[in-house]
Image (cartoon, rainbow, N blue to C red; front, side, top):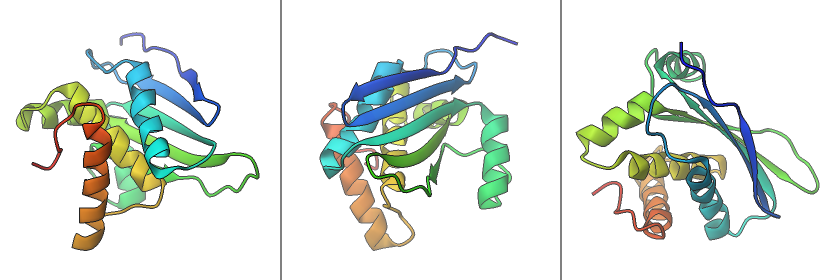
Length: 162
């Protein structure tokens, strides 16, 4: 089994802390600075204050276990978001985002996108979920997709749903 990089805590600005945990053996993952930038861009766009999030990059077995436990779907998925249920006076604990690297890599290939661009989409998508956005109906989906497209365009990434 390969040695995995250790968890890294990165303070982006005075307003956001992102912990990136890599628990995937997949090669070619985006660098942690990019992951932090993608996450922080959602905070900036929404104008939210001080916040903290953990982004965990996993392989299929961990993603499948979590998806089965929390969504009753016994298969790996690209991204899961777990909102924190904690109120603190000075810091918004957003929660955790779990991204399944092999699923994202497969989807990027199928959709003819770069891995980094699809990864950015998953980070932004997860962050929007942690801020209360969802896609349970067409109206919610359209709003969330438009916000994703705006954030990603700031990084020169094409609309993810076109």
